[in-house]
Image (tube, rainbow, N blue to C red):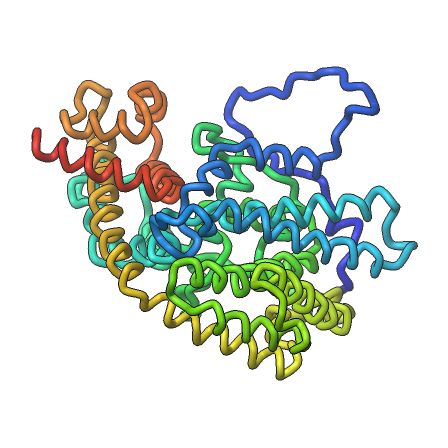
Length: 458
């Protein structure tokens, strides 16, 4: 990094300047005692947003679990935010007094919690299987995404070869983290649930500061922005002072802590869920928790109480790594997650968790449900992309095929399609991605059945 990171810049309360055409912000008088900071507004925007609310019906690990005790994306995100708050208060105390005011230190709490609440907001239904379905389906059905009827018509093909390559990367290595950044950063389409959060919150959730095209070129699968958000991402990281001299991006210091909170929660709490799902015997998980706490005298504790002890122990160990590597982090030199630098004994414990994960992912009920996810999401993608093709070939709504009209009204509305009929094919592909990734497990299953009925009617 050419120069050290600056906390005042890193806690930027600015937002992207992109708004819907014609949108104005009404002025209103707010008494001083009731005025919220920009970071409190971020938190409130998230918890009242439809995409956040839908996390309650999205799979964390176990699809369509009948046991109400099992975590979903919403409960997981809330727990991650709770753990991250502990990190936020430690980092606020770590920063030199001359670098931040008391008000700025308090804001770190809000920033980190908000980042954790949205860290899974872009994930599609059916957990990680949903991501894999979108990738695999796109690789096999590219003719649906860029259909011949538009490709072979010079008057209707409004995209370049470069743009097609960029969109191909967005779809073929679809990534929930990148979709989450799209939802959290944009504001040009409120119907899609875009949030337009502050730069500080956006930066704090980014673990992979490169885009889909960069990831595909380098053989990576993880990335944090789609091609259409490249400019917004650059604007965000430039404002935060996270651009290196060679144009690459470094990580926001708080992103290491939000990632650590996520690592801790899903590794510990997903095992507890596996006990409730009768995948593991309680004794086996109990013994692993005892190892993590490092205190065999706690053998009398119940699993829930021991889980709390294990989380607390891991928070302390992750924090030691952050604190010891703080200088490198503030130079923008660290890229790896904190768990890669944990003491060997804790690496061994987490490796044991990873091995148990293989058993969870191989559980028959989970496999059967995920096989169904391919059929469900594939049917929805096929229907919506055929609808988008029909929109691209139409001059007005009345020209749409009967089935395309019905599909459009199921996914959006007649008014929405009419208002955006002149939008580019690439724009509509983004709407398909927004819609599909935004569905809950239950809604996707129901919509797939409805679309199957439409096909029969046709």
